Length: 298
Image (cartoon, rainbow, N blue to C red):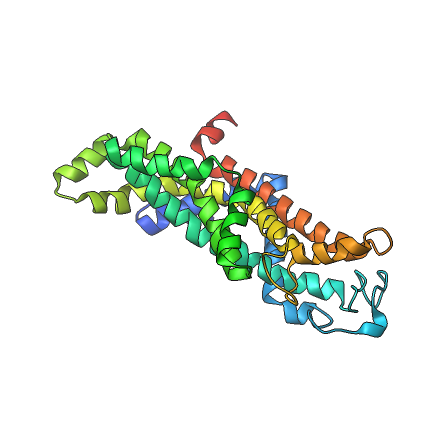
């Protein structure tokens, strides 16, 4: 099997694709930080999927006689002001975090990719209009812009996802445009045009795939920022609403007890830090593997 994957003369597209994926995986495994980041992200996914099996208690059930208990064998991360098990809430909160980063990536990355590819491919007034519109969004801080959109749309996890996606796509558009400018006048594009392919077909089948690797790297690196923005909105009461166990909202409620019952705010904060570091480490590893410029320097 290994010889088939490592063959220098693949006999099919499937073999060639599998070989590239295998080599990329081997390069990724040589990076210790990338492996750690991948394990953290995998842990987040497993925790989100198997939350009912991992969490010892409900994420929203109250137990007032056991409120504000410190970490112990019965409650690994202690309990909050309503007696809810913080470990269980952190575990269920992984679902919300994964939902937010997943939907933001699905919405913002394709939007930015299409806008940037169209601007870079056509150039001229199309480029100026699209990039001018993009620069308007880039000129404002993401969190402030997200706060403005959530304030207009109303608090809630759905509106928070939309607001974060709206603030995230311009960076992807800039990257896609820069990538497209490097090969829009390439011979293979000209040859495809001479064969009668339409502009839409060229952009969809030839331009966008070439921008994908850079987009994957940027999306992975941006996951930490998305998590922090979502936590910031939750902290301000504009994200997921109670009793949902969103990590930012848990920190917001725990700040009242930070001096005496430190674990209420600290435990979800540690979860945010751990997951953010995981995405950063994984993104750095993917950049070394997927970016040919970085690979050439290493």
